[in-house]
Image 1: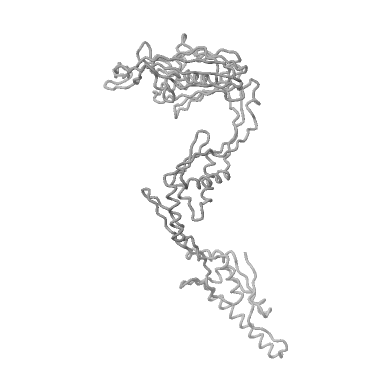
Image 2: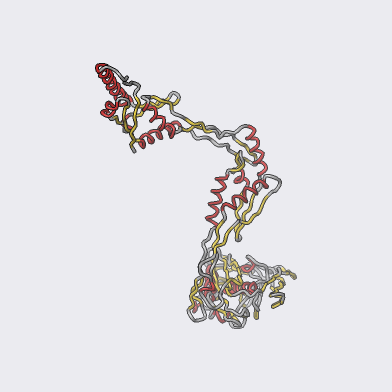
Length: 526
């Protein structure tokens, strides 16, 4: 960008001069213009800070005189320069002069807090310098001082002591943020780093909250339902509301809690302020079967299983995924799971048969029946058949107490429940191969029933027998592999009650009698 400027000459023409004097004065003006032009073109501009000098040539900023116009004007020297080039040149000079300020710093070393007062810095006032260059050229001044602003973050000793005391008050304290089963901890070192002599470093807190929102915010999920007409749903996505963190509200809440934390409180737990956003397509919009919402969920953890068992868990779970249970239908696990054999794709895994740990097709299917049993309990549906395992199985106690399991063995031992909700129930299964966790959900229409589950009561605890060793034809000689773990024998019971509008629909105590079980090792014979 070029601009036209004028230099006001100190020479002037007096009114009433004789013609001879006029031409003499004009000649002096012309020579003055020539000298200014020559000085600038040869010497350029000189900028000064302390003992340091910087030269700016006319060519550096495309400084050009309009000689003819300047002579004709008589009072002004007309020139142009590139303001963009001038700004770039000044920026280059600023980089050599500018010194960033060092903010006060709080350090924690082995629970001891130290506070530095910070260091002042300096910065070229570039906007003022651009204006100064233009003004000085117009006054025929080609040497000038660079205006520099002093940056003063340095704080007094009183402020240092105040900061240190506040930091000590926050030591070993924390704020715990919670949302939907997740937690985020603001430890004392983080809190202390946000301290400011005037309160808190709000911009840093706002940035942290903004980053947190990336982990919290979830867009709404529209419902999707595809029925293949064989009593099974091929594709299903329930409608889910979106979640949006209220950033500004959280910042206000945090600042308020920080003040309280500086006093005597050791830690504060608070829920994140979130807003829910409804999806455009509800679950009830995509089907006419009464599949509207989650009515029950069961969980289990198969960690510790061998690969073949994990494969069978996933396969069995998939076989009941998408099943629609009609109103008043009695669901049979054995019926829907079908044939459990190598012919249907199941792999050999260790099972308990006739008091021995042996390889059998479908080991792991009971992980699915156990999880389904827990789903039915939580949904409050009538349970018609359920059988506990003969021995405690550690897979089922990874995330539960003894007694919340259900074994199946075709064709005689089954798990059955009845759908008495008056609407269809959709079964959805999800097996996470990374965490080895299985989730079974029931979707339908809530009818107001509530479920109360007691904790397990345990008695008659007996120790496991000595470990046994069995031949393993799949292992090389010299290899010993543990395939089952010792379990104490025990009797277990828990109470289950289902109510609706003050009426008791189901009330039952589930008993389990587990025999003690020894550790089992396989000795390679191959």
